[in-house]
Image 1 (cartoon, helix red, strand yellow):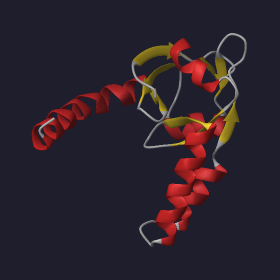
Image 2 (cartoon, one colour):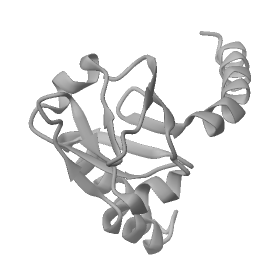
Image 3 (cartoon, helix red, strand yellow):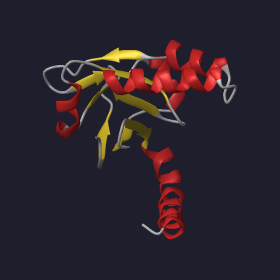
Length: 139
């Protein structure tokens, strides 16, 4: 499970240092792909579980086959190097609008990598959504 928020910068080669608390779960490898206006990073097990769920939604007619294609075609296997860095391919950096400053958040079953400015834009509405959900669900 991934939790927390961390601010980092991409280096000149498009690498980012993962927080040490996240690295321990990605020792062998992880999978990076497009996500909701950001990049998602999953453990191998969670990536394949998510892919299976997405494929099932296609079978049910709840989503398009194009979603599976985009998720799989843009996936990239990563393994932190000895300094805890992972390479973010240019096509994925372009998709997420990543330039230099990034925010890395734990989103329970995945890590999300956001452009700092984009994260600031959605952070307030995310806080409001949590407040509303807590009130509605009574938790």
